[in-house]
Length: 495
Image 1 (cartoon, helix red, strand yellow):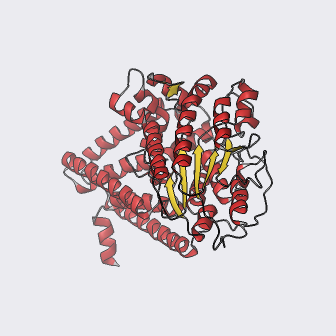
Image 2 (cartoon, one colour):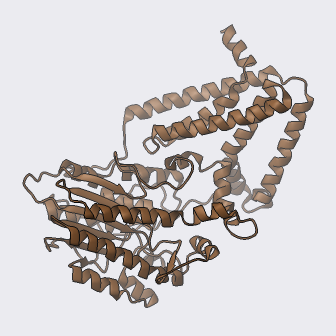
Image 3 (cartoon, rainbow, N blue to C red):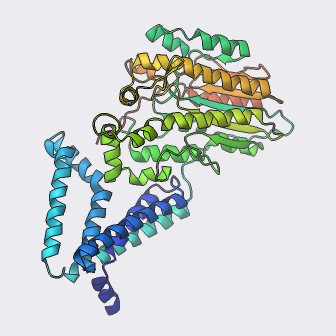
């Protein structure tokens, strides 16, 4: 015991224990949603950052304790900046002390004072090392016990839809293409709300043999929630739909990954091919849009750099503070992801396979940024950025012709290259969500193609929660009862 106490007093390891605690706590809190490998990579990055800061501080102070204290304070500022900012916003509304112009200046002064004070004192009190080391070790033990209990309890995210397995020995198993075009409103909504004629797409789909479900609606107005509900064929249990939190988004990620539709299709021998924004079980998303592993954003969303990127990145991408190489990368990341998904879907459609396949492709069109206006590519990067933050209906409608061209190319490829029966679910996860009454947020594109031309069960006013219930009943006689058709308007929780 005496040796342990001496070690905790004499060895300032608290600056390394802090990133371990931060990542472990976030990983445990978001268990099932973050792969261990990605959390480990994040930990290594934070470890490296802490060591670099420590080494630079040691060169300045030539003292291990002083270097450890400064490193600890800088890392703590990064980790807990979001929590501090949220506390100030909650208690002081939009007062000047909540703004970056104050916060950045305030903390800069604090760190300058800290650097000077550490330089002047001869030796920090070893009791500070003992306290910080002990506190972090206790927190690590608590989180470790919490992690063990979560690991033992298994995954509680899954739904239990009646008939969770498909018994269809000898039945026809067509390839199923689930094509989600993000924020695509129904033609009826486009006509009623903005007098936009989308007859070109409707005529194409009708000619190909699609059944257009003109009165369709999504159940939720946020993508993650809509997809989680659609693929689990159930409504979500949300604590407060008017104040959605990071935990709610995390829960949706769990539900999408271990969804009921894919589970049922696997039981029938289907191969699952994922070209979406989300992980599926044993089929991770091929899309990555950041230097850090994508799923660890559930841990890093409250950090200083994440907050600055979220709130201030526009100023780095446009105007006098623009960083050109950074702006190009970020502005066109969605475009590049879309092209990757489109190309992969087209390739799958052209490949022959004896195994039945379920292909989930999620394309962020006509969702902003609006890279095309008609057939002309938008070159005004400032406009792309501005309309990503506040989309306008004119730019949205101008992006639809390009989106329709992509839909036609994919549909033609699937149907023309098909060597066995196919099903195509062409779906908007929700409608357009700006400059219109709330009810139009849900009115989405919905068209179904079956090689058999048997559209039994599909009805005009269907909502997404029943899409796969009807399809599985149609294909495999699963006898799933239909859920009620209704909508839930979601809002994010304000900080």
